[in-house]
Length: 236
Image (cartoon, rainbow, N blue to C red; front, side, top):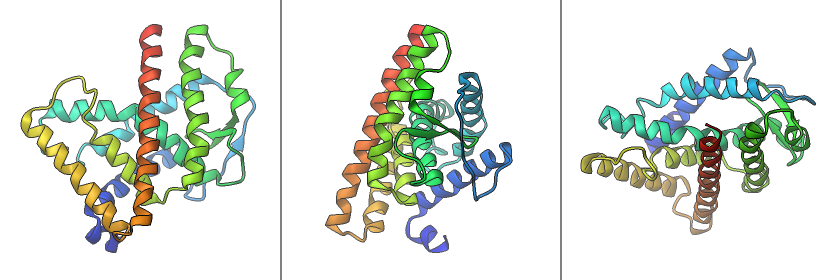
C-alpha cells in the first residue's frame, strides 16, 4: 500500500476511501473480510432500498474529503457527490458481486450489500407495485448487462477505483454549473488520475487498451442511471 501511495497518490486515496466504505458495510451486516454469500429465493425490494439508503447517506460521507473536491465550494462539492451516488452504487454492486462471488455463480446472479444473492429471474418476478417494478426493471436490466462485461474485463482493484474516480470527477449533468475555478479543479483531477493510470500500466500500449474498456463500462453505467432517473421521476 505504501508503494501505491507514493506512485499513485490519488488512486490510492480512493482505494483507502473505498476500503473504509466496505468496512462500514461489513460492520453493519456483521460480516468479515472473508465474506460469505447466500443464494435467496425471495427478494424484498424495501430491504434493498434501505441498504442503498445506508450506502448513500452514511457511506458516501467518506468521499467528502477526496482530493480536488475539498477545494471546491460546498455547493459544487455537494452537486458532484449527489451526481456520483447512483452510478457509483450501480457499478459498485457489480464489482462487489464479482469480487466476493467470483466464479462460484454465473452471470445471472447479483449479490446485494448484505451478501444475499439473487437470480435475475427471482428479481424480475418480485412482488411490487407496477410503478416500482418499472424502476427496478431498469436496475435489474443494467446489472444483467454490466455483469458479463465487467467479468470479462476482470478489473484489478486499482482499475475499479479508477472508474470510481472517473465517476466522481465527471462534471456532466450536474444540478448546478461549476464555477470556472471549480471546473478547472475537476478537470485537473481527471488529468491526474489519467496520468496515474498510465504509470500503473507502466506506459504499456497493450495494457493501455484496457482504459477504453473501463471507460466503456463507465459509459454504460452512466446511461443506465439516466434511464433509471427517468423512471424515478415518473414514479414521483
